[in-house]
Length: 240
Image (tube, rainbow, N blue to C red; front, side, top):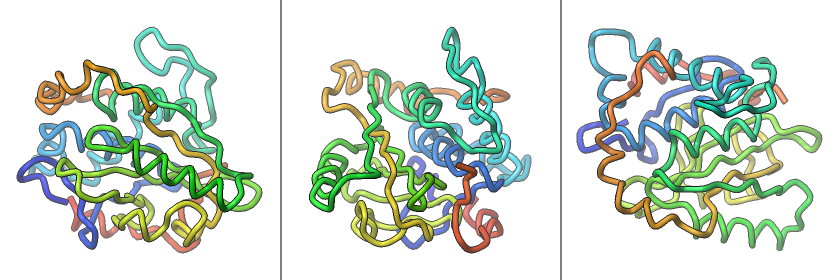
């Protein structure tokens, strides 16, 4: 994890691990926010407190919003048990509010029953829409249930589409997985993707610089069976 010139996650380098078995979605949303807010990333790794504790606090604050009745200021949504992870509707509202450039709108694209050709087309659409400040969330699982969430993103240089996998705290190229290719964290079935809409708001490019200077708002902030092996949270201490 590099915060020297803005928060970046690079393939092969340690990344934050989710801090509970049900916060894979929350961890992805926190990382999406860190990619936009260097001040928040700097606060996370500052020596005044444990980075692991701070990351866990951010996860909990995020889950309160994604799973609660009030998802944000003036926003009501269907509440969801935290024991069942992050619901797609809460995740979409949160990534629009805190994890993407202002004005970016998202859509939910079902993937579960698509043919191989349909998944190929969906992957091409995902690649075309993800850009700096406009990440996506991919839900994967078994044949019967979605069980895990990963973040699809690019760093500010925009050179490579990457996947942040919160259970292991690792980053790999999207090409290593695709959609319907190699299992993601042990889960072979793509269920849905929450991705930016094709139409980009004209406001977003104008406010990108302002977003990167936002001050962090401290104090706010199927079960996520995130991998079929035990999550190695100890790697997060090295990454943060």
